[in-house]
Image 1 (tube, rainbow, N blue to C red):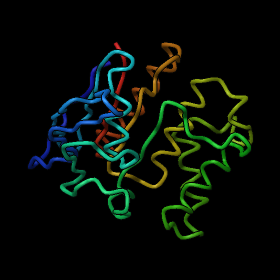
Image 2: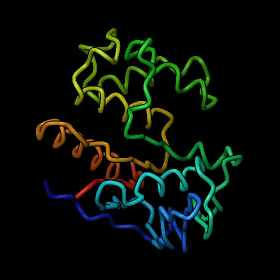
Image 3: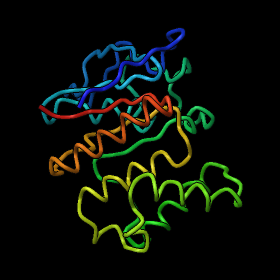
Amino acid sequence: MVIPPYHAEQEEIAIEAKDLTMRFGKFVAVDHVNFRIPRGEIFGFLGSNGCGKSTTMKMLTGLLPASEGQAWLFGQPVDPNDIDTRRRVGYMSQAFSLYNELTVRQNLELMPACFIFRPAEIPARVAQMIERFMLTEVEDTLPASLPLGIRQRLSLAVAVIHRPEMLILDEPTSGVDPVARDMFWQLMVDLSRQDKVTIFISTHL
């Protein structure tokens, strides 16, 4: 797959980390990490299992406070209480944070309510996600009974249904077959190049 280059009129930094560090007691999980990601780019965070990728992502989303250093999203310091900035970010964890007691459609309907969608807007947005992420045939199915590749697409749809400007994806293609992986990458390229979403994605060696 060839990813088209992204051309921006001026470079705006979407994510920045400076000396980002996480310690658990004497164990250093993340040691002074530095990077800057321009808005609209796809940035791959590559490393072996256990090297601190997930911990770094949790610090970027405010799920874990950094022991040292600082991170910024759209120029604002990462703050779990900054609701306006958090609404601009979609996050997809390794565990695919889905509600297994809800159907595919119900999972999608739940998220917009958390992001101040007007109730009248939700059905059209859910229908758009079901079509775009090829979930029509399974929209009334419970996620636990779905193949991994479809659950992966559903989790991505849930992460972007509120139209975030940034996606943080923690090893989203782990364990899926090559066909499902290629399909997922194409969806991400489309989100980046068509929707101008900044994508920060981790994967292992």
